[in-house]
Length: 254
Image 1 (tube, rainbow, N blue to C red):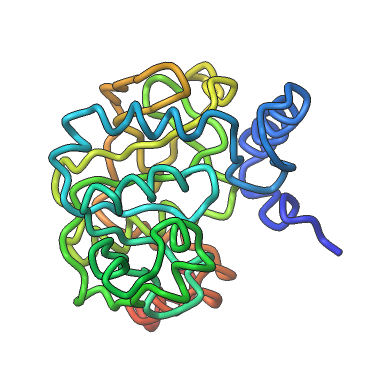
Image 2: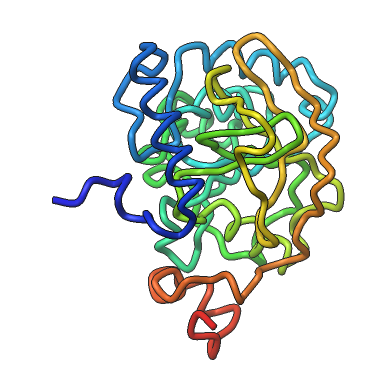
């Protein structure tokens, strides 16, 4: 059996090494409640990071939030639903043409569904509404999962490229409001020196990093992509993600 952390090895040697280092450090320090390898790592204190994010004007002013489906950001998704925000959660691995799930706290409560039940992807897929891009509302804030981050806004996920594809697709459909902040919540051990995370043309930079005890506004110098960088789309991504083939039927990963 291939371990998940091996599925996307080889796309960037430096990032591969950094991810292995961070996963190992989190495990060694007992900072994650489960094995972090191959995942956007869950971390102790993720609820505290969610509380810190909720104190910021960028959160309080946001009406529509897009989130990754990983456990580390579960407390933020729960807070979004409790705060009355519309929440879009990406379908894991984007395997459906309707690759986002819409969740509305008031609707869920009216149906007798506890909000905690839809915070993670299994419950979200069961009780939320899968939506096409033209059924979505413009997004005010993006929450993304990371393995490592830098104070200048650099980020790397687990290596599959889903986060950047999601944001590229949303930009293609003008669903990501200009200047909408891109935010992550991480353990302090996941914050590394700027030189450790090279940013490529298709990478979306972070505007805010929230740890268990710190709020970092990055003032990132990195430009944000305008849409999907088709030159960076891998053939396996094109074949596995229906929305890519809908957006560009003849791309073929080229």
